[in-house]
Length: 212
Image (tube, rainbow, N blue to C red; front, side, top):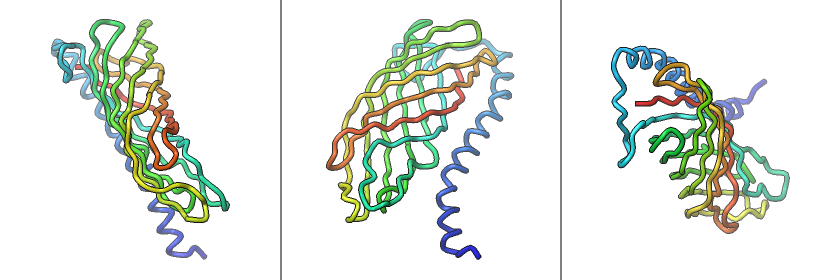
């Protein structure tokens, strides 16, 4: 017999994954319509960032991996169900650009408590197009905010922290229309955690990019 409290806890943990997956599915479902509409009108070459053109917006959903310690005592060491990355950027030319985005690594059940991590990222982008395929790399910094709670027996420092850390990543994209791309991407952020300083927060994600 499944205990109601256990069932409710399982559903609560699944909810972020379901929401993130449905969000990405909705965006991908709308992509074909957006791209078909864009085919009938010339590209404006506009951007949400100043001093640049060839703008784009994107959303990635992936699997996070947190680098902060899970401590002692045999407590859980979950990495969270899903990470979400919302971003906009622009290319100064065919190869170089700039990107700003918001990252959320969700809620991870660790060390008898919970870890939350999010941040604002600013990165330079290098892109090499090869037909419909493009290879890209990113490097810059992330201003992170984290919050850790834990069981006292785990020995894990708790509290809130924030600060700048390095960020880098790369991936491959595929253009399936003049304005639309799907991307597979790996990123690493150095997030600030209370009592331990900067620790890695990685994510492997799948996303959709719409170019103006």
